[in-house]
Image (cartoon, rainbow, N blue to C red; front, side, top):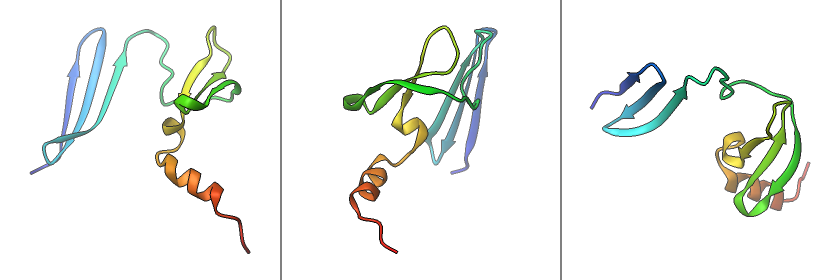
Length: 90
């Protein structure tokens, strides 16, 4: 089955889906708010960590703090835990 890129564009919102073998593997939604933040690179300071949710609030210079999940930064969280458990050897 071929891969498909499906785009649904409306005045207030654009949706893009990547379909591989009949399964949606990526979905991106962009709303026309005038302030698009996703996909940009920011320098920030972590102001609060939520370990139970594996997330943090990050001050990036906006009116409100940004909310960041560990999976937004690193896809394989279990790999992070394993690397920190294994002692470093030369």
